Every structure is written in structure tokens, then in C-alpha cells.
Length: 121
Image 1 (cartoon, rainbow, N blue to C red):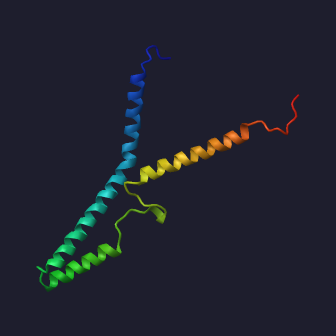
Image 2: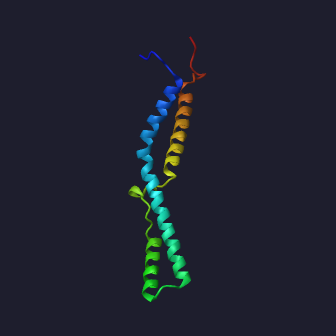
Image 3: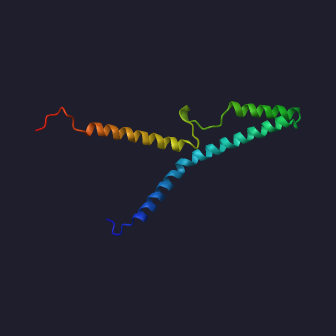
């Protein structure tokens, strides 16, 4: 039983709880996005070095090999090959939850409405 109910305090407390619960969930997404960005920058750097032609023969072959390796192996984290963990994952999950909530509300509305075929007493 709460004696002093302050809506602002309740809202701030709820937001702080949501934030502390969501940071561990979003951090793998942010880390995965950062790794993907670093790989993209590495590929751009390798491509520019190859284009400038400032490398010797062994350096060019190593740069080509690394460029082909980063092109063939995506360093994305894909659990069991089902979904990609990146910065858009939390938004996709929220969209999925909202869609599921709408479907549940529609079924709830269908099953709770009294049908016209039932006789009234």
C-alpha cells in the first residue's frame, strides 16, 4: 500500500527499470553492428590500397586474400541460421510483439462478442 502516489515518480521509476532491463538485451545488437561497420571500413581500406597500387606483389596478394575472405565470410552473428543479430533486431522484435498484440486483440474481440444465434432468455 502506497501512501504518497506521485505519477512522475512512477513514470521515472518505470523508465529506469525498462532501461536497466533493455541495455543487456541491446548490447549484443550494438556490438554486432559495430563489428559489421569495422569490417566494412576494412574492406574499403583494402579496396583503396589495391586501387592506389602502392603495395608490393606479396602485399597485393595478401590484401586480395583478405578482401575475398571478408567478402565470403560475413561476420554477422546469426543464431542457428534463423535471424541476424544487428542494430535492427530490437525494432523487429517490437514490431513482432505489436503485430501479435493486434492479432490477440482481434481474436479477443471475436470470441467475446455475443453471437446473434444464441437465444436470449
